[in-house]
Image (cartoon, rainbow, N blue to C red; front, side, top):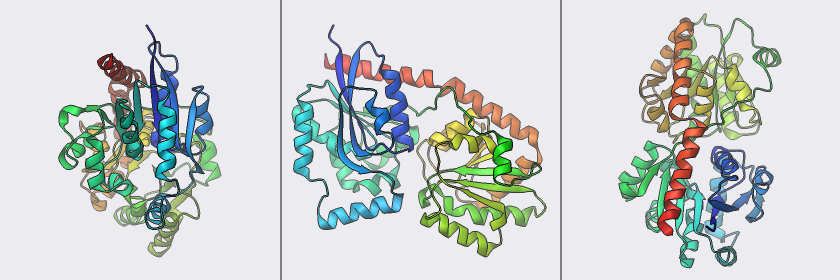
Length: 395
């Protein structure tokens, strides 16, 4: 029987969650016995070379490299709306026409940023699927709600990265529940640690007697990174003698959110307790350093760093009503605190640090849950089963 053929679309090739996850999945698909695949990357970035080794046919829509923060990306979108598209619709249509000549059995987009180009492939009667990772704030930062509702109706199959994402599409974007499949993100079975704890503690002048609390995140309002200085202040007000450092991993020295955070830290008198680490290729080294991993996100569908922290046996604390973390930690395998309540969050952190055995129990419990329900093997199998069903439906 002739192999089926799929075109996968990555919205960009940046070192961020969605492209990294897609790359991991495609590496597993490379040896598939029932389909071949090509790749279309919509925006260039450091992962482009990694994508290119997986297929003989890779296409690039926009050669612009991706190194912009969330605010700059959205300013660029506004500029494009005012002054005209930087990459014209005609160019996109020509590219889609050219690629469609390969007679794909399915075109599969990754993230809401691939939705518009997916609908162009519908003109050639090619079935389409999309994985949505985003919740409302991110969705509507990329595309107006009315346009999402209009275009998502044209997509044949919708995969959501968490139950929170699926529920949001049903409740707010007119997507029928029976059109949605839930397939969670995963992290690789083996996590490599390049720099051990003692080295990082020496490098950043962290005393062996000090606990390490940390986040690993893009520096933006949605991720709640602005809350760090105020949280550190709350901890010190409640337990002035507590010995700890707070590691804020992400962004860069020139990032506006980082600069504002440093300003707040200085004015609150907590700058000596916070260590700012720039985004780098080894985030797991720092997550491994943490005694407690925090998710301060106001909205986050199912963050990969949360899974990495679980893999490394770290107790996790997150806000209720924040998205995928609530789903992941809902059976007391982690700690959920009321939305944006820094007082209770500070109390939970202090309580954990005072009882190391409880920290260990939570870390072991969340790793066990990850292994049993969210392992790479289980979720790759779900992805393959989903594709087999789609492709058999088409036959």
